[in-house]
Image (cartoon, rainbow, N blue to C red):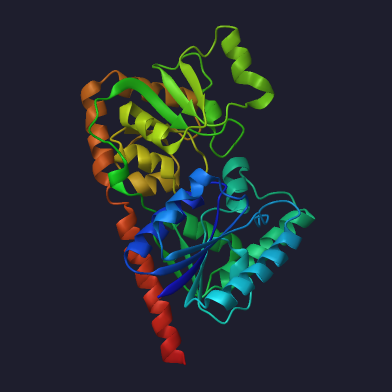
Length: 367
């Protein structure tokens, strides 16, 4: 079996792609991988060198959610067509909506990792204001979502949101994301600090909930250190936010070490279609403190501790209660680890492989 898969290097889709492609390659599946958005760094792409059955075509074409992307989308489609003609895959797996709407002669899957409309509604409580860009974006996504032979999302919440905003696809399925548990260290001694990953300027990640003087324990925030109008640096220079430590972007090895030692992981997101960082924390046996939003409830059920949606006072109180009770904190760390192991890359790859086989069998039967 030969799969052509698209990806982008800008966010968590790249991690998802690495996990899935690695597992598929181990099963003898040939992969042609095409990336968009930004050219990957050497560190980002080094895993591909270990997979001889993967042919990689990196590009810097704009992604569908970016402003002024329409010309790049046309050119990227032409590029894809040339790669398809040369490589002759059996099936197309698109991690962007747009390509699902193009007339290909090969079965195609579209995966909804996130989208602008559901992000905007989650953050602002209403759909984005009308503009030429949002109309074009919506039309591109709707066409790709509806014309794909199979539409997939990583949570039921995301699948429902995509259907609500863009209509019902021809066929749909849920496949949870997964990570390789062997990459993480759940049995190291925990230290008395909380960890969170998020961009201060991203309203969806909502890391600004942590900008408080009353944090109950030392808290490390991983992500770009830029903040609106330098708010964090200004506050810390005047003696505030003494328990919040900004570490900036970290390598994967550094981040895994921080996960391994952190007693608590805090997810402040108000928009999280799946959430790879909480999963990585769970696989590291961190007790999870999560914003009480439907997608995180779907993944973690009763094996995490939740604070009231988007409520900074509730967040502080919830961290305090968990930090002051080592027995309960350890229990929730164990529960998070046990549940996280259900979301592994091996299981994810098997489910995708099942969908690939079903589509290819249907094509043969229709021929």
